[in-house]
Image (cartoon, rainbow, N blue to C red; front, side, top):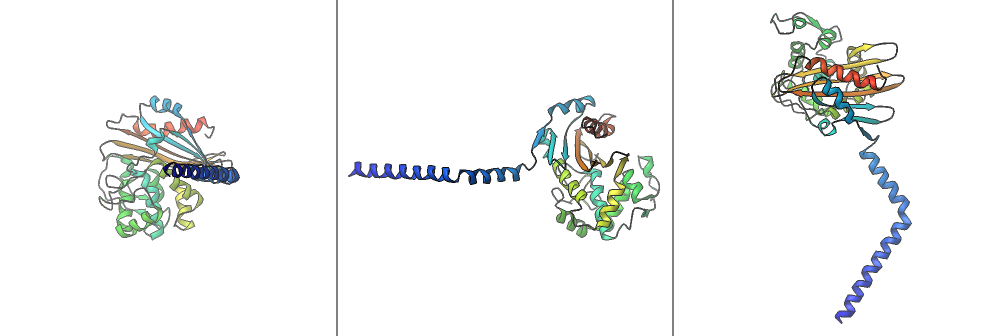
Length: 288
């Protein structure tokens, strides 16, 4: 009886196995298409690691990472991919979001909206005067955007950050400090996704607000391209964090980039390195 049961179990197992093989053979094409579709959703345009970009960081004595995204080809070029997923305080790159929220809430009326200088002398001389939105963005005037944030208020600020899913969405640390030394964090990959939504105008902001932002973001323009960008430098955290994020439009395509570097004791070239490393990579792609 025991031998009979073993044989029956073995027969059943083999029968099940043959059934699976028959099923797989019959539906192999469908299963392959399902697998391919799932893979495409996870890696839509594919990634290309660029370890050779280390030379650009070494040239300036910097540690960091870089993401470049080709919109038309839907492809990412990445240096130090693991670090590109790590979240850092956004520093002045948050001025991009702060501008949108300020415009959308009516705190800022347009690019000519002006704040009077409060008379407090600050380290950067260009900050010690009256500024409008355009000049405040260009010269990264901290006090201007701190006043914008105060007038927006915590409730409205949190609402729009939640709505856009900006980084970790944490605005703890003070309404005029959370992006400088507070709880807000964002990764390079998240910066790229945010910039793509600005480009496509796929955010919960009016076309007017996005149009004004795009205009004041122009850092460089020629007959062949338009470069929109924003720097950032976090000084009030343990390690100095340097950012340069934006996108370049050329010949019907857009190339999005996010650079991040860090240093406990930044050298004199720390600020300049953010832009120069980016430019070298863009030139490698014949975009500048």
